[in-house]
Image (cartoon, helix red, strand yellow):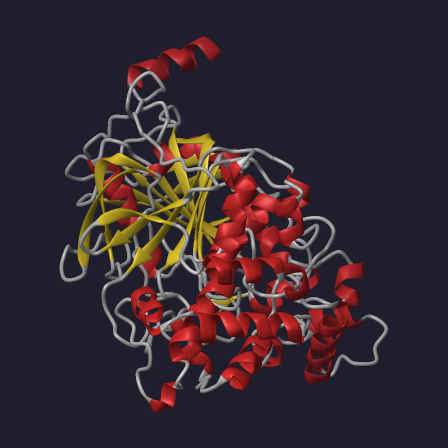
Amino acid sequence: MRIAKTYLCLLTATSVLAPPVIARPSPSPAQPRVTIKNGTLVGAQNSEYHQDYFLGIPYALPPVGNLRFNMPHELNESWSTERAATAYGPFCRTAPLKLPGFSQDGVTYARSEDCLTLNIVRPSGLSSCSKVPVLVWIHGGGLQDGGSGDPRYNMTFLVKESVSMGAPIIGVSINYRISGWGFLNGAVVNASRVANLGLHDQRLALHWIHENIGAFGGDPTRITIHGESSGAISVGHHLLAYGGRDDRLFHAAIAQSGGPLSPSSFLTLDQQDEQYAQVLNATKCSGLEDTLGCLRSVSADVLDDAFRPLTFTPVIDGGLVPDFPSASLKEGKFVKVPLLIGANTNEGTPFTTWGGLGVDNKAEFMAAIKAFDAGQGLSDKVASDITEYYVTRLTQNDLKQQLGTVLVSPGPSYGALYGPISLYLGDVLFSSGRRYSLQAWHEPEPDPNPHHASIRVSVVVAAHFLRLEQLPPSCRRSPTKGLLMSTHSHRPPSRGRGSFNISVCLWPVCGSALRLHCRPIITKNDNPTNMVFRLENTTLEADNFRLDGTTQIIQAFKELKL
């Protein structure tokens, strides 16, 4: 039987001996079918783009009833008949944040507690023998919003471009519980070992992918996890999970605007309990012996209202989140796989604007620093030193050069120190963590490739969510494309306004069985280099901007509870 299967794989010419050949569909193609351990899935085929879609696939039991606020349970049922996988599942429940640039005006999505599904987009013509690399997308949204069915991140364009390069990949996107549904915390939650449920959802999805992706033509030994914003923070948590234990769930990681070092301070247990008490008061579950049991019986709408004014983030649980990320990085407790990590040039500007800071003097600058310290542990001395650097030591020329197209002071309503506070927020939320992560990665794994995107538009606010939707590269050779434009469901976007070309090599397949000769950019810690992606070109730059400022922030990580 083993010999027969090997012979069949050789006949299909999609094994590791040669680049996969993508078959062209017939004029009236049959719906694609894949059999996994639970049964047979029937997907949809897009004959125009030569892709198969398997959408809304459950990877866990629905987290409802007694499974609400509980660890995700592996799907233990079999389907006696074929199961349709032709539509995205609902987003996980939350109260949408309406974040500028992320939320879409007039666009709503179905939401449900029964939301633990994933989606697979593959080139048509693959078989279980194909073994092509896999890219797993973890959506952003501050861990409070978003979903895998967002058409801006439907994977079709990346898969299409990978085929045009002769280096096909399979794209996977996942749902996971968010807001209080996935990140409720507090002493009661921690004692019940049900903290960080959203991360556990992601982890179970990665196990599902590792076990089943081979049936779709993917290679379980070549899985890259990829996220942006809180999706990148999630990627970072999986790199640090269980003290860096390698469960062989992925072989590489990409983190855009986030990463192993979270930009948000970890809440103290007192702060967690305060949040939990607010939820209990809003749901009339206070004073009961089994408060979690009460919350499991409350209506979903009541819980959404209770969660709405609060922000829920991961907490240290001694397991999946074993310690402060800065401590884990310092001790080398992370999975030793290649990491591509970066951020946008002026990523602090949207947070300055959203926060309505209007900083005009040193006292207000210091107050703003303290306001963004959720852990409330930053000393006045450190805050004063940081203020001195960004307000006094950075000259007007420094500000103009480092802000690029963003104005140093757009107007009185933005505050006289709009430029300095924007640079500080970009550094404390993104640049410092990126640099610290790269320093940690340098010794054990010689492939931490830094990058950042510089969008040459906008004179007031640069981008966080409105980012370059390209698959980041780590090496230069073959052409690929990325777009600023949003994509449409099942349909790669047109190359219109906002498109750009960069000459790179598709990172998930570098060094793969395709024998692509990719040359990674490796730099020493004493001479770090960034790859910078702009609309007009891709260049290298020394990674030394605001080095003194980010060094001060890194030295304050312990006080910041990062």
